[in-house]
Image (cartoon, rainbow, N blue to C red; front, side, top):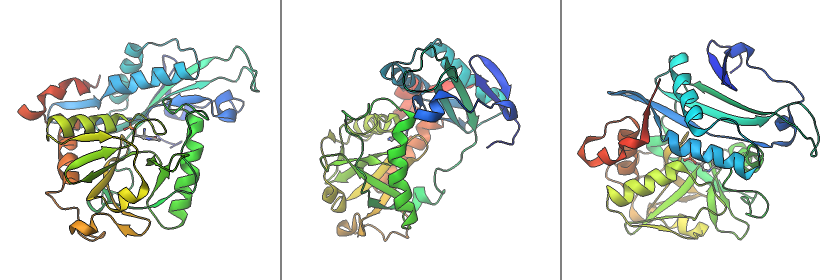
Length: 320
Ligand code: PMP
């Protein structure tokens, strides 16, 4: 990502992409104390829009507040920076990474007077894993690492340092030849995937874990609203065990980067096999819940609202 044309927003100024560097003693680099967002923008017939910019920006501001990092930009200014970032970089489909980090005025846990820096970079990310993953789904294993405990770190803050735990778990799964990992909380209940929330469908009802040990995902929220209000599906937030995923009719993960990806296999069990779901190498059935919610999500992100989705117009913020 170093060597490319483009502009990155830092503390209210636009830096040429190649000059957007920081000092080696930058505090956040050493202790992981900082927070970030992952936002997508989508192009459609009505132009390019940030998807759920208000919700992402609110979570960013809340993350900083939870970490007690003072912020001198308000939500409006942060959204404006994201809108401009798309225009400056001539992006239509993009992934944006607003990030808050502490400066190099001092090192050590007791450092005082650190400057809060805020940056926004954007680039064309494309599919999270492969375009194929959205069609055939992911093979996952349960992680041996537990997901965060609420008294170990703040799960409602998208803190940089929180991702060490995700990466330890994901790297083990990828090294073992899998696509993803399912992380359990410290009591052994399903929490989330490495960077995505988890849902299961059983007998027509959608289930997802409560947001204690997992991130309060914005895609999770979009899926819950679309499932309830557009598809008329009952959604239950409750503790889930891993064997409930083994015996689910369908399962999928959700995230801004991941979007909605079917979970096809967990710990060697083919999810949905008991209900005759196609083998893991085949496409998810077009009439499955997963395929229907994927299609709705694709329409809403691309601004293809129609009558059934017009209630969600406020989820879209135009670029520029
Ligand atoms: N959990 C974790 C740990 C994540 O990093 C993400 C991605 N931000 C998610 C869940 C999904 O959240 P969202 O839908 O807001 O992107």
